Image (cartoon, rainbow, N blue to C red; front, side, top):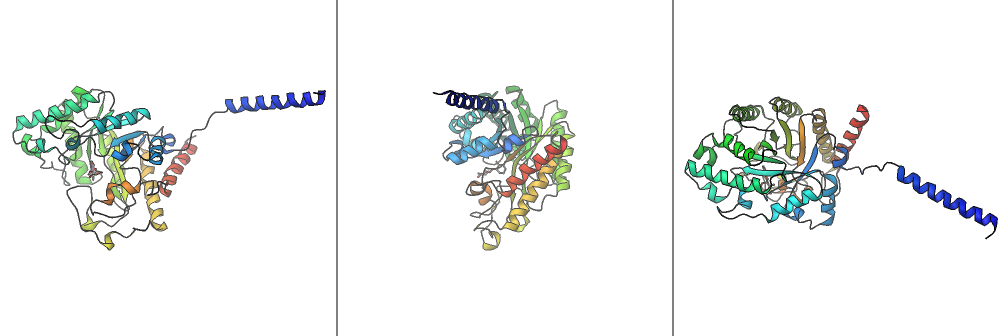
Length: 379
Ligand code: XIL
């Protein structure tokens, strides 16, 4: 090799070495995902069904792992599923769900310990107050101790209120009286003192129900029993509830000294039969074209409305990020949303951030862009 060639070779090697060095010192930029972009604000969660817990679809599994920092089991931890008879427990899916959350280093939320719906028949049929207390205590003890230290927060009681803020006449209230509320929280905190314990309900932005929820939580606290948080389910619509009521609720709940979580967020774009609001899963209506207008996809104008609605709501969440612990979507993509079956069976709803092809919708882009703008302004 002549001198000229040697010189060329050495220079090339030097350039390569310096180039490599420089690229390794560069700070790696995090991928732009919901989870990463919102990490300094609150957890961003998703409810998972069996199919998603199994990671059957690799694209879906990729989305879950990349985009979300928290998960909730959509159905697998409800008493009917996890504790179907007095002496039988189905832990297969709850265990897989927890393992998935641990694999992705997620905040794992437990849903739900005491709920009148999807309730095990063996509990529903109890008529004696001592027997009911024993049943609830044994259910809570078994499930909470199995996941102690692994499940980070629990919906201890779900949907105990009527729309006017009075207590729902559930089997628990009928058989045990109001005591079931503080007792459920007390038993849960005794088993896992480190888990955050929530009261969770729908229509929590409605003034009468809000007042009822505040009374309910105060009554529990007055008995010296801890409540760590209030969950607003967030099954909302394009125009209701108003942004003012959403904001007022977050502020009023937080003033009790508890965390606020948005636990089941989805925004229905479909007409609401008989002005049905909320999520009482006991209701169902017949399907019709009028009620199911977007079977061939969401028109651009509605896609924009949905993106704007999500943006407006997230502006409030960001403004109150000091009060909000977690915002969880009730599902990952439109195709598997429960709102295709509720309150009218067989509809095509479009309430989430990912569409039927698992592509992010403009609502997704808007929420990301909102946080990035917010970060720039505060820098
Ligand atoms: C829903 C699930 O999404 C459906 O798959 C199931 O058939 C019925 O329950 N409030 C709650 C959730 O607290 O558990 C409900 O989930 C939706 C309303």
